[in-house]
Length: 117
Image 1 (cartoon, rainbow, N blue to C red):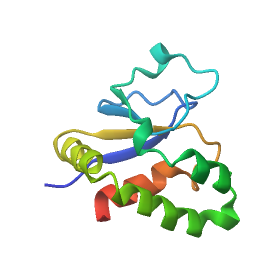
Image 2: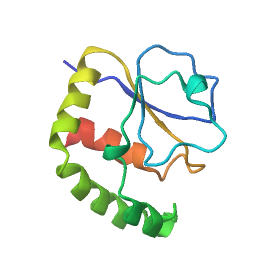
Image 3: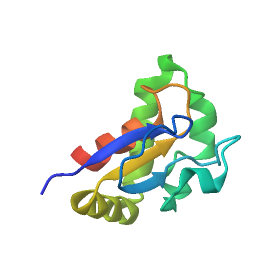
Image 4: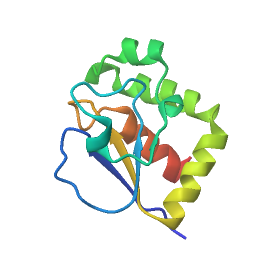
């Protein structure tokens, strides 16, 4: 059975698809109310650690190294990763993030990790 995983920015609230809505940020997005996100879960423990997030600072020059380091962190959360894979096999999983950069953020890496491992 395949996995249905999409990535959406929390500030692009035009998306109205159905699925399990999961916020994957370590900190709550600025200016967004909890009600407006209609979350199923805020999984801040699967987000990059504060130290890694601050080091990366969404600098595209650090992207490849960030991917490696974040994947190492994800490897220590196999119980959560397994649960998210299970969800994605049974219903659409929507990974929500707040970064302005749509190509260089933790949701991109997490989606890759969930699909490929």
